[in-house]
Length: 86
Image (cartoon, rainbow, N blue to C red; front, side, top):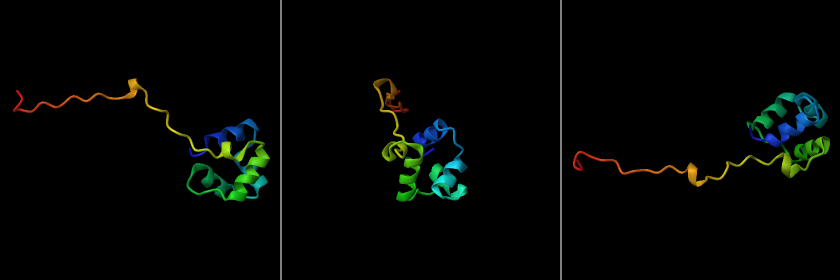
């Protein structure tokens, strides 16, 4: 999912994806493809969606970032032993 904040905002407003698409004057299939990341929203579509949902455009369309690694997430590697080492 490319825009989890947008999906959350749509659910928070208790709207279906096709309802948002119609309010933005987009075809529902095009909206769905943009939402999944297969296509990009046009700048005017982003602005309109933000207005309709009542959230900031920057927040709605922020892509998720991976969590930072911690020390417990790092993997220690040990040198492999070969027949010469034995």
